[in-house]
Each structure stands twice: as structure tokens, then as C-alpha cells.
Image 1 (tube, helix red, strand yellow):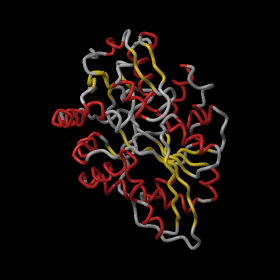
Image 2 (cartoon, rainbow, N blue to C red; image 1 turned 30 degrees about the vertical axis):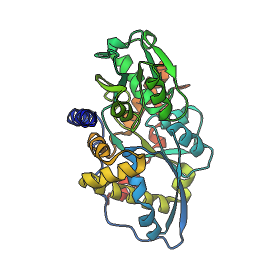
Image 3 (tube, rainbow, N blue to C red; image 1 turned 60 degrees about the horizontal axis):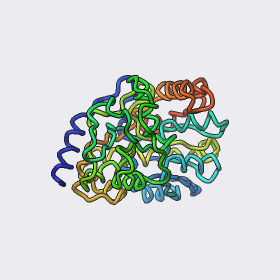
Image 4 (cartoon, rainbow, N blue to C red; image 1 turned 120 degrees about the horizontal axis):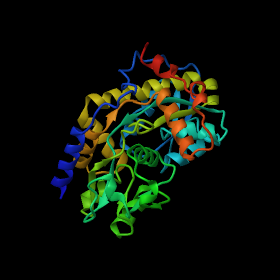
Length: 333
């Protein structure tokens, strides 16, 4: 069974293509900044997902730069977004759509900083269920996390492929990814739209499979970006020096992992709890480095407003809520 999983990961890795019209992954970080004269605390929300593996590597480096990093774990992007908007966090890793969602909800204290990575995404089918094409979704029960990053990718893909959302039964699952796996294993649903490591677990245990013809990370509206670093404007202004060092340390760690697949796999395994050999193959699927851009987020905002999933079109506000200067400075440009 494990050989089957590893082979499927290898196929997925070969299937990766560069998303058209998106920003290229960031280059290596520039020179290390000087330590702050006065230590500053940054509270950062994150999730245990592979594309955020650099988060595990930066605390000691930041300590030496005068930044006291407090990491706060969240099960979902939405929970981290809520905490950020409530003022409990300075920075959070959130979904690519969360900037538009925040603006549509009336928030004026958020700013997008950078993306984090990309990968192909597949519907996970229950063993024995036919899912050879998007048309095969008809009449099936598909578990989703409404409003999640993967749901936006999935929904946008359905629109562009002309597949009615009403052609299948969407089963809303609350909580973490383990709940999706339980529903699939018990036969309560025919497929799930989720995230790693919960995509690979059903395949590892034999009750699920990657529906490779149901890939949903390549829509024009949403794209392949897996996440986003978002901050409060308050932190981006009042703690700018600390924020600059956070972004530099993150990009530096990210570049180390991009250059060292073994280290990436080890960090991924530590972060997610996956077995090392599976983590090594799963890491091959992920391309670290942002592929999102303000123009992509504008397309997201308009598409989501057209679909009625956010209250209004905030595409005109994106430029004022995006600050690429942190990345520019971190890269030494």
C-alpha cells in the first residue's frame, strides 16, 4: 500500500506546472538585517501544513535579530483570520482569499504581505467510487469546508468547467481535516475536498484515492497559491522593523528548504506528523515560494462577489491592502 502512495505522489509531482499569469516564486533572501536595538514581540498564527514548514525554522534566528516570536497554532485558516481581525495576532498565515474576505467584511486593518507556495490539488475519492471526470461528481456526496482556501479553489474550478454546484450534494464538514477522513472512511461521503496531510492519509490507509482527473488548483480566478501571510496594518506600521526581520527570516528558511529536499521532508514530517518517507514524497508536490499577486487577488475578489460568496466586490481595494515592500526589502532589492 505504501508503494502505491509513493507512486501516486511521484505522478502528482510530475504533474506540476507553472500557473500562467502568476508571480514567480521569490528569489533567495538578501543580506541578514542587523539586530533590533530594542527587542520586539511578534505573535504569529500558523497551521500544521507542509507549505508553512519554514515557520518551524525561524524562532532562533529571529531571537538573534531582536524579535521574540510567539507561534500560535490554528486548525484552520479561517480561525487564524478571525484572530488576526480581532487583534489577537500581529501576523497570520491565512488562505489566499482571506484578504478579499476581510475587506468585504469591512476590515480596514489588514494588509497582504506575500504568498507561501503552490501544489496541484485533487479531489480525494472513496475507494470503489467512480471519479474519472468532473462529470462523475453528479449525484455524489462531497465533503467540503465552506469558505476554506481549498473550497474556493474547488468552487472556482467548477464554474470555469461549467459543472453545476448543485449537481452533487455538498456535505459541510466543520473542524479539522481528521473529520473529513472519518466521514470518508465511514462511507458517509463519496469524496472529500481537503488539505495535506489529510489528503494522503486515506490513500495511505487504503480507503481513498487521488482522483487525478479532478484537479482543481488551476482556475484563472483563484489559482494555485496555497496560502498567504497577512498582517494587521497596525503591526505592519508600529512593528515594521520586526516585521521586516520576520519576512527576511521566513524567506531565508524557505530558500534553505527549496535547496535541500531532505531537510524540507524532515521539517514537513515534524510539522505534520506524517511518516518520513511519505513526507518526502509529499514535499515533492509542493513548490515553496509565492505564486499569488495583487492582480490574482483582484480576480478572486471579483469572482467571489459574482458568485455571491462574499458580500461585495472589493477588487478595487486590493492595491491599498497589499504591501510588497517587505518582500522587496528582504530580497535585498
